[in-house]
Length: 183
Image (cartoon, rainbow, N blue to C red):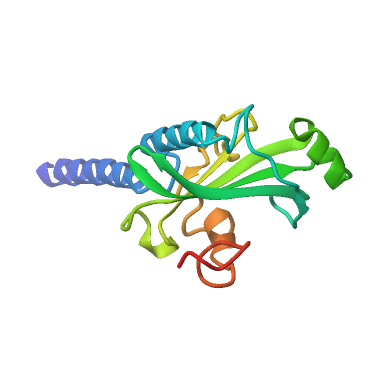
């Protein structure tokens, strides 16, 4: 009888430990990732990369998943005491028929989301060049995937699809499609 209770107790303990480990090892969407993504948005607003006073460039055509047109800005900004590179991609195309000029003339009418890569410190995610990923609504809310996970952090790390899987295929090994500079 003692052995049976001991075995049940060990099974219950192992279940709790495994549940806690799987939560701790989630590749993205945790409270720290969400807090950092919020700080990142605030820094991008301060540097006029997003928000009502944002810089604007001419959009260009691109393949999915970002929309049929995007506008990209990049530069160094400071987030929570970390000064590093940020790449901001504004994604356009609600009906996929808008022209470059229509989007340039009225970007707010056509913007669907803003996706961001921020270069974190060494050791953050060495396997993936230490990029932090986030996806926001045009007004700065962190978007969620179908499983209600915030799209912030190491988004879909280890999965066959998602930010990291797609950008790992970028030429030059830097996870950036628009150029090869950040190895």
